[in-house]
Image (cartoon, rainbow, N blue to C red):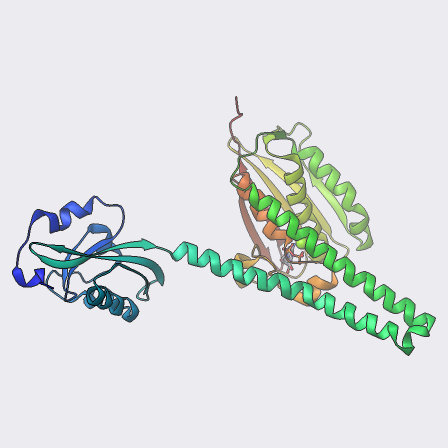
Length: 351
Ligand SMILES: Nc1ncnc2c1ncn2[C@@H]1O[C@H](COP(=O)(O)OP(=O)(O)O)[C@@H](O)[C@H]1O
Ligand SMILES: [Mg+2]
């Protein structure tokens, strides 16, 4: 195989200018893995390009460098992954295609970024692991309880009643997880579709306050509504807005301090509608705040579980807010209490 780098031939074809118009990173190397050209995208992603120097100056991934050598050995195209570890870790798929020309032999390396796809795959795998783990613990309790009831202890009416109650609780918990998972996937599926209905937050929040009043009373709490009677409509799906605000209000009751008030408020400005759900109680530490909308994230897992939580509520809320182009802001302090505020832009009516 002849080597174009040796021939010091530079035709416009090899010039990086003509490659610059390509939207993907492309690198051209000679058959002894010397850099000949790299387009603008390639030089942005991988530093260190200098024509005439080894490819390894630019890309250090050893599997990829071996793959390039193999392409020339076998004289056939290959696909290979590149992991870039400098700065932020990024992954790429490279397609290495050898060519022969009268000036010499070399290879084109076309590169596609796969970082986002890899991350999505990693998240999917960890989600499946999380779901299995969450369902597994109530199932383990159920299996153990059934075993006990089958044995001699099952003959005792008191034990039986206690264990059946335990089974009911664990089944309820699994039911809650499955229901929330279905809601999560339903809200995620429509997250990128703009709502085409109009809704008014006043009846939504009044209904939520009514439905949750028993729960609030049980903790000595009152739900205070601070909403104008002539609240304008907004573009949004009634059911989704109900679900999101219900989740926030229910959290305020669950995690708020007994014998204090929970406030549901709406502020209207020219360009936005801001919902505030406020409660008093132990503040949420700063470090947890950015992670609260992650699936299954709970500040205190056992407390949330005892209160019947799944850790999916705020993940669902986040999808609904995104669909309505809103923003979630969380503030929490000892004196000021905790406020979950959601700002929705006023979207123009659809014609
Ligand atoms: N108003 C609040 N005050 C304090 N902590 C809260 C509040 N709302 C949510 N959290 C924290 O955020 C976590 C996630 O909330 P969420 O997704 O609704 O799950 P859960 O099923 O536990 O209610 C909760 O477990 C709790 O730790
Ligand atoms: Mg919740």
